[in-house]
Length: 171
Image 1: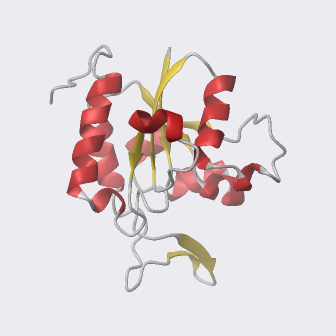
Image 2: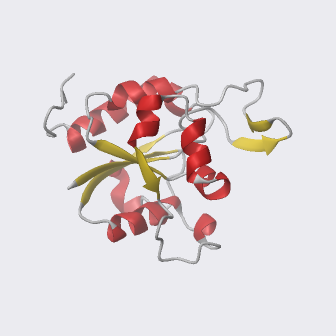
């Protein structure tokens, strides 16, 4: 069984929502321009779970491409874990994909790739109503910079992936 973390980027790995500009991709967070400021936080959280793959559930992958998105992440360990994006092989018209609730995007991937154990970390909660325990919900302007969210994430990782071989779920 695959073990998957569905990873949003904006509002999770950095504060705010990124946007394209003449200088490339920049953060919309007021006075803050560092993208991926919490990549190391995610890397450390996932360290005890080497068998957890990452599937990108961010508009980044759809708009800019999975390879661009993967290469933009400053952590080699996180880049190596990325195995795809939620829209890969989707059963919906790709033009409608961005309008679907995020939870529906994730659940479509889960159905197409079952069986798998999964968690999602996202600043969107739409479509996750029946799977609240499998969502680590971040606030857009804080992301993984919120100690309470990081602690909840740590507990959910133990709950869902703590029994994987070689995992130190109680670390």
